[in-house]
Length: 244
Image (cartoon, rainbow, N blue to C red; front, side):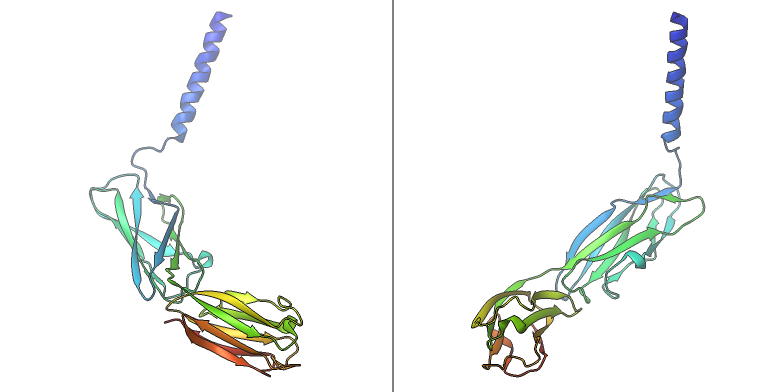
């Protein structure tokens, strides 16, 4: 019985060692990877920024090596012109690290998070660590203001929105957010400086702020009137403005 136990333990030990050996990457494997699976940064208004993405290989060569890189457009949300990605990255001879320098620009960044997904190009005999995603936003210097509305008697019909240059909704109020008989509303507004916006006020009935009384609206940002009007403007009225 003792001999059987010893034989059993020896068999288990051998199987375990074989299993561990199978999981270890052999030395000299042709393998490349991004150092991180995600990157996050911000770009100043009207500026550009270089983001260095480190690339690592599993081995070291006595010659320079180049690996092709591509942008996965289907899984990227950043606007065209807001980034420049080199088509390849070089690992210098005698090293296992290279730098992929990505240039990010404040071009149509809008208010949301912009993303680009990077992949290594498929190549026979080469394995890689998968894709990486770069997320970036436009830095924002906030400025404040006020939207003042004097209703015509039917506040429930009034709605409004402020859109950024890409059509993203920055602030808004929906139909029936205000009530019939409500005299007025003063709404604090916070926007980013140095950007272009469009303010639109809407009336569900289609007669603006005109019945039974004439109403008015005034959008003031950083002490400057950016949009104003009132009376019968129909179903909607829009004003483009900037915060420069």
